[in-house]
Length: 190
Length: 190
DNA sequence: CATATAGTTCAAGCCGTTTTGAACTGCATG
DNA sequence: CATGCAGTTCAAAACGGCTTGAACTATATG
Image (cartoon, rainbow over all chains, first blue to last red; front, side):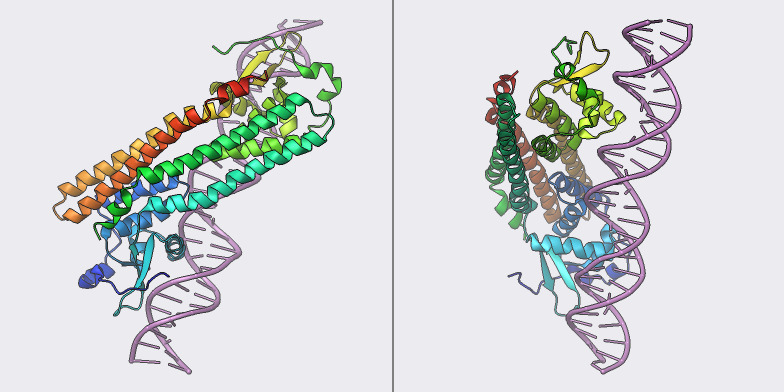
């Protein structure tokens, strides 16, 4: 499923890289953090975005240790972050012949991941809410003391949740169209 | 601006209400919490949604003390929550002739509030991100060591942020249309 | 198979946000 | 103008999510 490919890795031709203190260039820091912020906005972890952005900007397969140094993250953290990103299919794990360590490279754009996860995660969340409101309405209806007006108000709240769900759906569909060209865009440099 | 109206309050005709331990009916709890969840999803505080929902369901002006008991919140908490909700214009503060305490009642639907706040808060956030990416690109361009391919990748990230902003805009516009009937819907029971 | 290094797991700690509650201010009433 | 209740403020506590790092497991290599 996830291919274990042999790829060029840029760091082999720079022996110093293994020793040098992780230090992003200024512009790399700014860009990486900006992506961290967007992705956080979409409900993911800031550092998931930062890791992806680093790999994407460098366009080279980095080891966990390198990511660790560059972004000043812990060993365990990098392990978990890369696992998530790999599961979502936005980074790829590759094995280099000489090297005994895995390397990671950016695979696809982040919106794809955002959409995928939002689709399952957020929709189940919203439909859960709708189910709760439906339950409330049924309970209220069963209770003799509930007035007609109260039942109506619960129904209106259900409308609210439905509208939210509908809007969210439309949002996703839109972002898919909107970003349409993106699939190609992100792949073209590679 | 915010009218200080005289309104009917239902609790006066039920002297026990002042003494009874705050205890929502089961269906009220379910409904109130469901709304708390939706609103949290929109990036607000869970309890802001719960307070609004309680007022909306009861369709009666409640005092801070009553809200406090029903939702098991602290005095200070209710004060802050009602202040926020009133500022956003989704609840109204009313003064009753006999009573010396303020009462609150639900005024408009929550989506209105969500939209309003999202419009200012989220957009400034996204445009901030776009500005950061632009800065990164300029810095990278000024740095002689940056490759053409890297500049392109930053540009693609900017496209990503732009797409996000665009999608968000469309989402808001959509939710406005989508919910169109809502303005009337929420007002008709009152 | 021994050793070394890479990678994973998870309890504990950290940090930002929300909530609490006690002290305080303001206001109505006698 | 004294009393008591309503309402606000804010420092501290509680909470929740994220990250860390030490212990552990897996894997490559001689």
